[in-house]
Amino acid sequence: GSTDSYQPKVICVEFNPTMPTDLVYVQPRSDSIRHGSSLSAFVELATASGYILVETTLFNAFFVQFELYEQFLKDEVPDTSIEALQSPLSMGTQLYQLYDGTLKLWGCKRMLWHRMPIEEKKIQMIPQNQRQFPFSPSNGEDKNEDANTIREDAIDMSPYCKNCSDDSEDNINSKLHCAAELNSMLEKDGFALVRGTGISGNLCDNALRATKTFLHEADESVRRSCLTKDRARRGYSPMATENFASLLGEEGPNDLVKKFRVGPESESSSSSLHQPNAWPSSEVWGDEEAAFFISSIEEYFEQTRLAADYILTAICDGINANNSDHAQSINVLSNQSNNHTSILTLLGYQYGSRHKKGSKGYMRPLVAAHTDVGVITVLLYDSGKCATLQRVADACTADPTTEEWVNINLPAGPYYIDEPVFVVNVGDCLSELTGGSLRSTLHRVMPQPCKKDDNDAARSCLALFVGLEPSASLTLPHSGENMTYEEWRRGRIARATAVLRNSASK
Image (cartoon, rainbow, N blue to C red; front, side, top):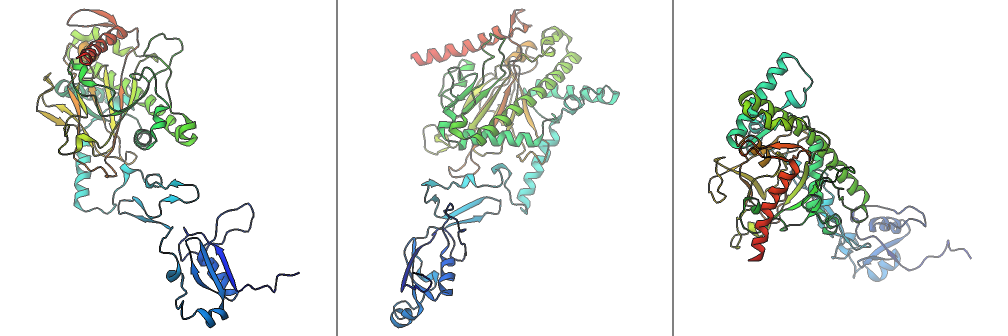
């Protein structure tokens, strides 16, 4: 028979308790859709059909005919509003905004039917290093002024990096000025800040975001999907597994930094410096995340390596203009090829024991004082709070226990707004090729005061360690020795390895 005239006295329906009480949402009429409808939608439908809400549980709502309510329940349930009757155990999830653009969640932070957490960091619309209150008072303006000062003081590399083929007299003079300024800074400090590299700010932001996502936000299983036997050259290196103090022949605790390395791949080369890269598994991480990471890091690696070649050309021009004695030894730097051995290292620093007052390692270096193996290093940092790069105040100092250190400050991103500024420092190989006229200066990474739950505590860095072709012939001015770059590098690493072995045997 027909059910048109069937009117039950009591109706029980299931509603979606995650939906706000003032939302009227009706699930589309389809057997293939499972959304659930809001309680307000059921109340509207029930009211139109002569029913009134009298009770709810967490997922269910109970309606009775209006006449029965008036006759039997009005005194017991005087307030039939949703606000009065809905369970106090709310399953709703609310989103609110902070002044700097951070999105926060309140209420239920789980996917109820999928048993998964809703993570705040995954719903952010603005990258962490780009969040700021757009109407900040003078404090923000002061920071912008500091950033602008740093940017203005950075050496403009555009005569080499952007106008390399311009042979006009103006650009030639600009190159001479650029080369002289760069070499003067490297002779004095071993470090220089540069801009005008031709590397886009958008690429820098993407590379830093990819680095942070991989080293700080992804599950450890993602990082461990790219472990290799030779983690000093390729793939993931977990925290506290490497020791930079050994590069100076010193003994000390392992460094508190996560690393990931990529480099050039060559099927025809037998050098250990040329080997396949180990990328995170898309099966573990997801296709979209893995693809963004790989494409961002590959493009950054290629663009930064090209910029590094131009920077080396400027260094060579500056040396030749002032010291012809080293012309022969540095000539090898002008003969770069695609057979290079440069390695891009992603570094991740985070809050830990060395940030905690009262702990044994409080304010000890995250990365011990060291010099870099290689020719030059090109660095890019985000604005994370927990770590800062320092160099010795006197570039001639070879004592890692010195108390005279200088912070190397960089303007904070986002880099797509302003021109990126990079740190360039001299490596051991270049220092030896120039007879020490360019300093391979001691530097370290120190913890900075911050809180564990600071959203911007973690710091990410991209470091390009520039290396030569394995068979490149080196002549060292002080000793007159001749060797290939690979032989020189192998000897340099062997000295550090011996220190680690001696330390482990004690």
